[in-house]
Length: 213
Image (cartoon, rainbow, N blue to C red; front, side, top):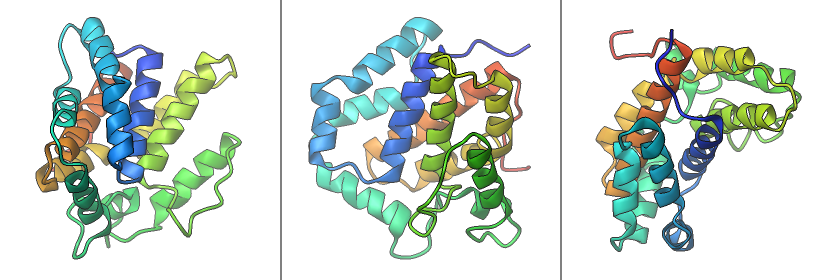
């Protein structure tokens, strides 16, 4: 039996938020909106009420918003996901799960097939491969949202995708990202991602990838 997880509305909002922050570097307006509209505070409080404990990554992100440094966060994001140099935390599943650590390998094709099977198109692979971490987190959020709105997505569909394409590599990615990040905010994003995925894996009874796997 799985451990206690988070309610679906909170899970959806966490995946959407983390996916957005991993997709594009947050500018000063975005960071200010997160602070002014208390997005992180609201999520962090909801999580703590449900679990009886905080998520350390959300707390770190929330604390970092109170300090100046939007340009530092943007530079850190660009360095982490665009370079220059070799990326310490490549944001693509194929790199973590293919023998040659290349983009657009088997995992990317499998992820794309899952999107299509759920009725979602994907027309910007030249800009962002389908197995980019932000795309995968967004897909999980979409499956959860469909279920919440009564559109019939099954828990098993989500569990199968999560086991095959999130739990299988995102823990490794989030650990690499936490080690490589220079700013408290991006480090908080990495830690929060790892914590959310670990919670979901526990509640679904899904094994997590680890450094020895």
